[in-house]
Length: 157
Length: 278
Image (cartoon, rainbow over all chains, first blue to last red; front, side, top):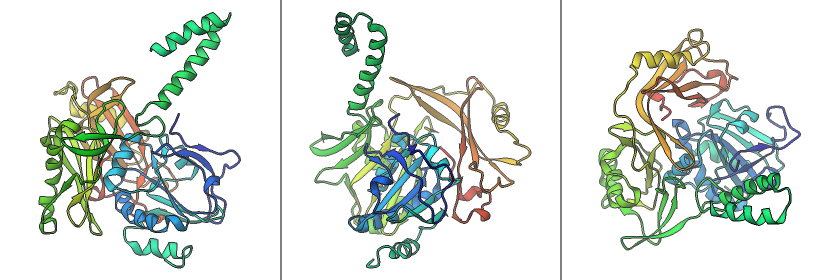
């Protein structure tokens, strides 16, 4: 299956703060393959969302603003769509005009591996692949929390 | 499929025991054929440049319906709204039908088929979206949406449109009967004190290889009054019952939509805060 996310072998426990993030192989809406191993050295916001979740929508443009701003400095957003089709996700992303990669998790397998029980859920993973924040629920409706969070990694922000 | 047939002949001449080999090779080649097709959902999507009434557009089409999923203006905007800053929210919500009318033959939709899904202002930008309807019924997960910047410019839109919908216009199964069937799909419905958060009669399209089945369904969203364990991955259920046969056509466990912020605080969402899953 083209769009399924696959966990890489070797990790079984749920993610914890201070622990290495579970690696995976995922394909995004543009057909690009993503794995955490491939993006080591970047600060990654791994986000789980769905288009029917009202709280997920408001955060997207704000996250995208910082993605555009810090992309060249090594900030990456992987916004994983949970249990929806490529068409639904793509139409939604085009409506919001956001630019970050959107991997698909059609059967929710990756979300389960990450212990995601609510959406949106965000994991902030540092340049060494360690989970530094787990943010459950809508926290980036305003810019400040995201800005404050990213300042730890991009002091010039 | 011309290609695999030609392959059959070639392989038959080449191998003495071709059946297994053929089967494997056919599957492999068919997969490669699918992966390399210029459509959405099969690897890297390919955008086409399209001339629409003299306007150059970049389009990504749905592989099955051939309707655009993304439309972007090349060197021009899809629409520019004059005096945008003076418009009320109500007036802004009329933009969808105007846009749909402008690109009607491309979208294969009538402007009056749109029903407002949401219109929100985030920073300086408005985000507006609609469902497609069929005889006033929402088509599940259909959408047409766009953002409007502070200068009233719409540069692109996203859409999930179903042309030529054919679906029953009446129900053969009663609502109460369907509701019972739906409730019975959920284990421990009473124990969890589940309640019906939202319901609707809508059109549920199911894509097949080369066609789409359109079900007219009773769509139910149930949520537990008693919050499930915070660590449970289930926050609710979407159950769709066919209005013609009474059979379940969709059962889906929903993640908890969470406003803020910590799991211990999670309570079933309030109706006014919730968006039904359709």
